[in-house]
Length: 206
Image (tube, rainbow, N blue to C red):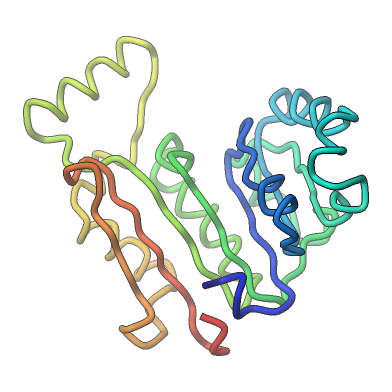
């Protein structure tokens, strides 16, 4: 729906890793600007693969990559940057931010700062947020313990434990100034993960 109605638009993928969504969109002819943010070492590997001639041929040629941008950055330092620091990033077109189990690894305050950085600079913005929740029962605690044993901590899951917690979180971060019907949320995977699609509807693109 976002790509169908937005005209010129962009997608920002946080912690994109080896995700290939940008190339799948290119292969089907979508012309959306696509930005990926991740750690510099991960971006270096991604850039090497993007430059592979086989991949370029599969998506229809080098021209399909003209509006694809890789930004090597530790998101915890995003607050030190301005939009002009990132090649191709526009603040005046409809924008969709995607965080698939990315912000949950940041400290709560730092994750809020990342979201706020975008909402303060981009007028028409939506976010797709996919994060674990319900960690208080036996299954959830085991999951947290297993991750901790591997040195993996997700600070936000302790703060935002339910779907309502996640909704309140985003409403409090500037996504509340729009008609209620513009907000949709989907609990999935037996309510173990929250997938929220929240939009800022000020200009009707959503």
